[in-house]
Length: 443
Length: 62
Image 1 (cartoon, helix red, strand yellow):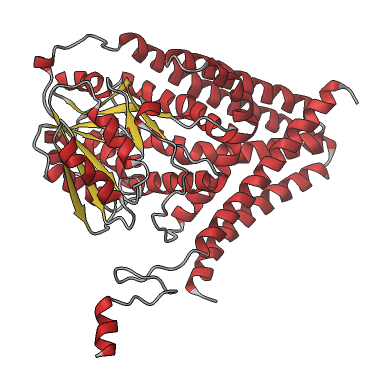
Image 2 (cartoon, helix red, strand yellow):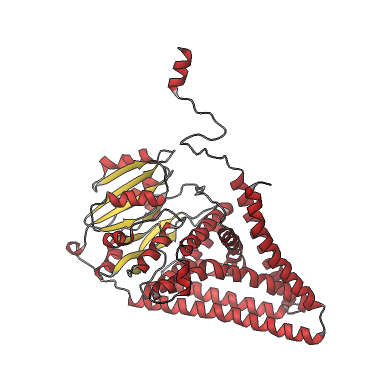
């Protein structure tokens, strides 16, 4: 037996233990006397209500805070003279097919003074050639650097080291940005305690059910919490495709670390730890290409979950001590809840209630419980889609989103969390994709 | 079988099938990962190809 096989036994035993334990309890419950069964049915009822209660509190808090952020946002126009110069950093690894569209969208930005820095992280395709083509053609300074492959964080740090300006806008090379993106985001930097601004990421390829579900997920599942966190200027992940940073803040926290697979989450937590505010700007829009194959989607979410857990593990002492770093404590707890606890609870609750419904004849109760969950998702989808002035045709997808999509993804997130718990090795696997991005589509 | 029973059956079956599909897809992802060519530690090359530089051929011919 190889060491890898031996290490696989841990998570496998844990899953078997939990599953076996649950089935054992259910078997015992089915065969127990009537009085015990009555107590057990009551316990199931209470847990159903508790689960719904947690969900209601989560949705209500996120929607309310998100709505407040939406109504209080600053949409004032600034003259060109008031806008500071910005350096844009674009790390790229094997993105030859799409990097042209990313640079093209950057050159179309409605912003007075900025430069574009592309870092080719040792690509084996034509990324370097595709990026270099813009060096001489553009009216905006475009500089391209090439280095041996060492990961996204090192590419970003190299770009920052070569940047000339006091504000740094980091974006992914497989994304495009709206012309107003930078102009909207920079407004938040007028508050000198703001260290970073998270933008609004949207899905550009909406030509299949899978990518349309992700489009809804980005609006309802990812942007809704980010918008709510933005109300208290404590966004806990500045997303890779669109983030604006104050150079002083990055210097303060020591730039990007290279020891996690979620360098964006890790950096944001470092900023919050150092007392910097992290704002959200919903009009700073970036369009990203969502995975259009199921296995690629699973791969992406697996990496996200493990990366976030790695970032959280670096701050494990934080959970036990809310003071003096209360904002960090709250952010870390919220991140752990959204990334790990909630997905696991979701899978376990669905499985448990489905089995109990079958064995105890509580199907009707399960139906009403499920209907309430779906209604919640439909309401949340309607509110968030309206706030973002998005396609209303995405709202009915909330039924499939609740019925299938979230539960399906939560299974992978649960496995990823177990693997991270047992510290399985992992590598940065490149996502497969069919290039669809062009500057015209994105803008 | 009334409409309530049909709805309950659909929900229970969908929940169970979704969880099973989630597990199967996760296993498929791990299998795909395991079957990818292993990259050597040194720069360039995989276990499947021997890298030859143009200079090697000239040296062999000489």
